[in-house]
Length: 357
Image (cartoon, rainbow, N blue to C red; front, side, top):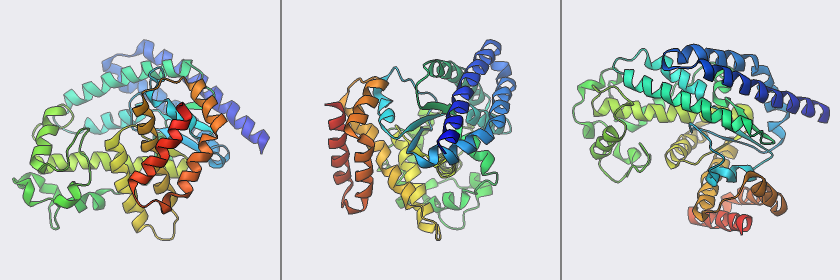
């Protein structure tokens, strides 16, 4: 087993060097007009590595705590506020987003009035490639840049229909093919459920849905077709969030890895979906995923709150001395005994304090 593990690690490290070289070549040829053509090269590269990633899941990640930082466009390790990730588990992964962006571009091409959004996405991809090159050049031990969500979509070829879950936020009997006919959004939504989710960063769920969507339109005007009414826009927003959340869950499940979040909106909506999945899953023990997901954002939040600047090597050294992962495992094991979220936060805060003091 150790020999197989060593071979896996060697191939994984090699894949990182090869990917770095590919990204450098792609960057030299890249402009807004040929983004999709060049990203096809990236997609083909990871198609060829699919078997390797599945083997790593089986022989590496399955037997070690592995965390993947996901649902973000970049990971700047020089800005040390996310470096708490390196105190968690044996392996850390940055879930490379550029192939997810490519998929969005390909879908958006079929939607009228999305030209500005597609241009913005292409600009973001070019920035992403620059960031990935910087990240890969650092050669951080036991840290890998892998398109886990893209790879998971190859394993889970049959897309899970998220619409039955989305329908919970609307009253029964709504015609989703003709949402444009509903002029007053207040009459077609379930307000209680909408008050439990976030539609964007700094969203206030206590406000009316009309006010929340008005703010969304101002903040994110170039991310959706202009002719949408409120009902269409709401469906568009929550479909995007919960499709992403489902992809993250399937990735976590397929690769035996835990998602690491540093964004409250993504984290909260992921947990809402996960609660639903666990509630309706028959026979499968998925509580484990729900419990792990409750820990990751509070760990990052408590670390970020302290305002310390620790390098990756410093934080890893301290985590090793403190047996930080074991302490987090103890909190995980005691989760069912905590009566309140505050109790959980207090435990995590004292654990993080020991790490940075």
